[in-house]
Length: 337
Image 1 (spheres, rainbow, N blue to C red):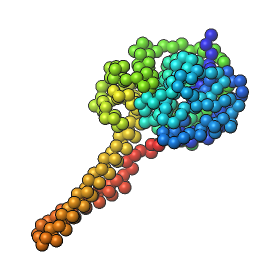
Image 2 (spheres, rainbow, N blue to C red):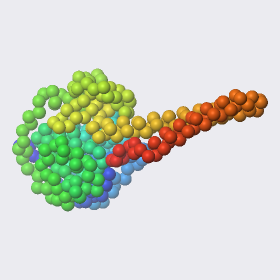
Image 3 (cartoon, helix red, strand yellow):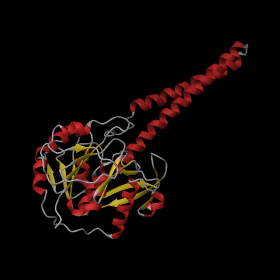
């Protein structure tokens, strides 16, 4: 009989403090495997594993590619890598970003649900935007158990709130009660039956393969959703819409994946980049026109000098209007990390 023994925890902003409080609840010898996905800066060394190792009796490590999954261990995702879990081992890969992150919570949750079905307990803690929502939806769809930190006490409630809007959650708990709840669930028989249809299972497998660095276009991702006129903020590729219950998310033909919130964050960031590019281009024009005006003045051609100076003044005024717009507009939405 299958039992609950695969625990995956996703967190983002405010997550280190929450993880320290949660993981101390699991004593040595706990018969379960734990996977911790905390959003990390991609270009810096992470000290998360040694930090967490100090607060729990279970060994905390960063897994290597193809490392076996062992009971009684906590595995922490390394910076700029996804953890993709297959039956009995882990892939640690630099597949396309999902929700603008690598590691992505959704990637690990989705792969665990596909491999271990109802044995999985998925937990989302404090964080911004919505990484983890699709992952918990998949865990629930595959017969697993879903737990969310109470948004009212989460330091950053966006991630728990997003889950509650889209997923049928089993438990909404304050942080101090999540550990004891998981301890009561570990080892219990799995009761739920998997009712996921074949096309959804095929799509799950394709998305797991994409995270493990397989080619999204060759895998047929463009035929597994609804065509859109949207493009990927990361690479400019065409986006396909994927429906999961109440949730609509997106994936491009090169593999990047987005929730609605993370797609908007990428679009908004792109708007700001292009506005600054426009300012730069206008200021370069001002520099050129002023230099040309000076050259005409030095050669005694006052009429031409005045003409170029006037153009420079006009463009400078326009660039100042655009700068005022940038400074007064909150281009990137609250919640972008």
